[in-house]
Amino acid sequence: MRRRLLIGTILLSGTVLAFGQEIRHDRRDIAHDRWDIRHDRRDLARDRVERRQGVRDINHDRADIARDRQELRQDIRNGDRADAARERADIHRDERDLNRDRRDLRADQRDINRDRRDLRADHRDVRHDRRDLYRDEYRH
Image (cartoon, rainbow, N blue to C red):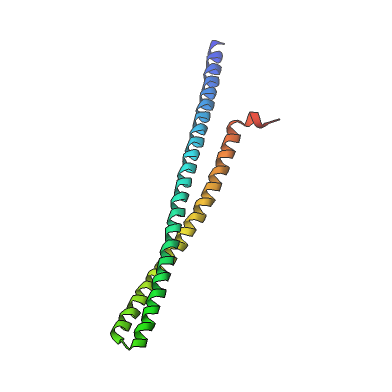
């Protein structure tokens, strides 16, 4: 009889300990998800700053190209072939830089979209984890 009581007590205490560890593990998951949300928000903010800088760089490159084209037209009107060739080379360099900035801007936008999607998924995970952890309170 004592043996059965002892075995029953051990099994019951093991179940209670396992349940307590599971709750602690669930709380760690929620804490990790919250950390992940903070990290995604910071990453999203950095990507938005990079996107603004990219737009600014594109606007500067467009202004440089417009200025160089004006100077090229002036050099062609004046018949200065050497300066016109330098201006053409400058325009091509600025256009390559503009295309590079546009590629960077598209990559930044993809990063922003990916971060937004991750952030929504993390919020959903936290809501589900919290609901699972406190499921008794949610039942009516």
